Amino acid sequence: MIAGTVSTILFAVSMLPMLVKAARTKDLASYSLGNLLLANIANAVHSVYVFSLPAGPIWLLHVAYVVASVLMLAWCLRYRRAPGGATDVVGKGLRPQERLLEA
Image 1 (cartoon, rainbow, N blue to C red):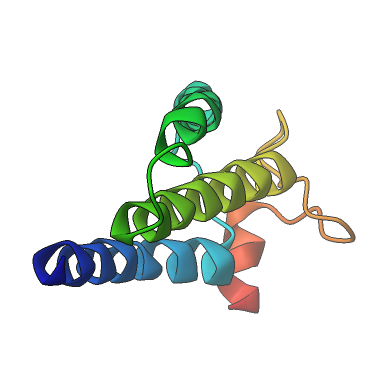
Image 2 (image 1 turned 45 degrees about the vertical axis):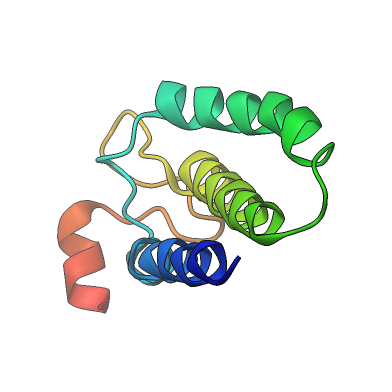
């Protein structure tokens, strides 16, 4: 149980740099929309199994994966690039060069 708890915490914490960078830069161009969609579908199906198990570290780990996957998908949809290179950020149609200047 201790090993499961420690590994769960380490795996959950290992996702934080990715989430922080995605939230800060809003640059998710390197992420595949198809992969993020499949990951979320897989997490939904896997939830049926995980939550049928007794509560434990696996629940926390699965919730961390679900939250990370949902956030990445939502951000990917919200901040994806428009055909002209601008982003679909609400209120900001910035081209990559303009985003660098704003940062």
